Image (cartoon, rainbow, N blue to C red; front, side):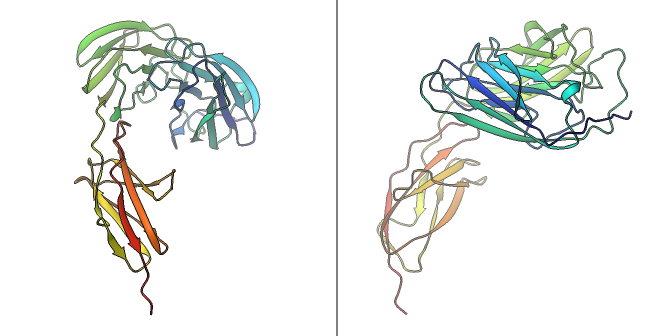
Length: 321
């Protein structure tokens, strides 16, 4: 099937969310995912807004910009989810496109922005599905991502039903099962999206969503982990040690596959490295002569953050040649 694309500039899509809560985390850009390739010039942009306690931001105002021009003002639903379907008059050309989602509280001037980049390749769409049956490669559970780790016991499950030509399948009943137990029957909206917010606990979960009329099942698995990791242990440099070559190796142990942020002296942003399967991590700094202190913090795959490790102090003094 040949698709004629409207000639256009590289498009920039920005979502500006104004919410009542003054303490928000970054808006999730659920779809398209970072560096995902989509096979349609008119993708549906999906995002989610939650507060710093993992609760949905309801009725948040979302302004969607395409090519830096305002395309629509949308309100988040009861699950904090918003979506915008790019229409044929604003079809995207083949190539890279970016999404920017910004949250600006109504109180204060703090703004949180998240960006994503995706690629449109719409010259080889599959044949149109005249029966509008859900096409499994395109229909999926958008969030939680398959294989992901999350630290929210009440996550919003977001799924989407699409046909083989990317047409949303609306107003269809969907049975949602969690770990094989039926939970709820919900209905897809105009963009093919369906939602459910279960009350879960720490552990592994498999979510199955079955569309009755489509005879289609889509699956995702994820793990809920709300336990903060232990603070990292710094093994080098040793307390009170002397560095003589102007370079210090900071290393230690923590939870495996964690993101480690080290802080040297008055640095407030930190330097990021990652622990391996055995929990070992290392990074290095160039240091000037004098006394220094280093600390470290661990963040696990679910986003839980440890306490800051005790400071290790050392002294640097380059040898005279």
